[in-house]
Length: 200
Picture 1 (spheres, one colour):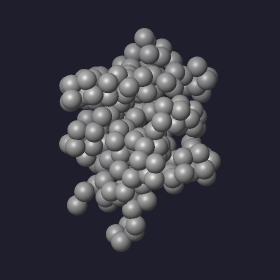
Picture 2 (cartoon, helix red, strand yellow):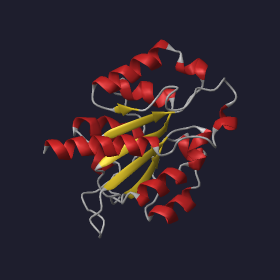
Picture 3 (cartoon, one colour):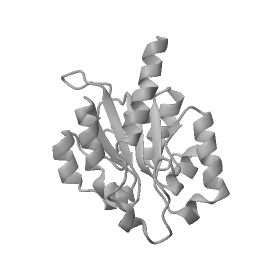
Picture 4 (spheres, one colour):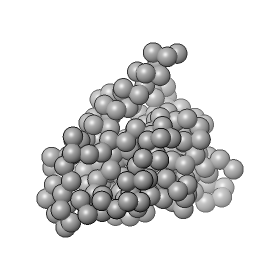
């Protein structure tokens, strides 16, 4: 059974036939500001749906995001027989992407709705951009670096490094939220889609 369908993402499109972007927010304090990415994506003409990991759900205002997007915020697989509630994604941005989600994603683990969507989307050649947010100590772990390299090799656009956003020390993440470049993932997605359109 398709994860896209099972996750609550049906085949229907929005009434305006706008392209659909899934913003996937992981368990980081930065997720509490994901409405900024939603706003930027809407300005770009996207119909935005927000999906969170279970830990990501702890940081977001689900009701406010539902009002902003016009779609419910999803964080868990739907139950058998439940209706699909989200349109099918044309692209995805994982932001903030945590070390945990990046490592599981690269290993093909699909034990959360967000991971299931990402694993399946790669198999369907859906454009995906990942924007990790973590501290310098966690970012130094060899498994994380290897996971980023694997995702990049498999066609995911990974926006990470000091040229994107400098790493912060452990325990200092909440002091480094306000300068985060929310538009970087969208810029990467624009470039990706431009290349696809040019090649068509």
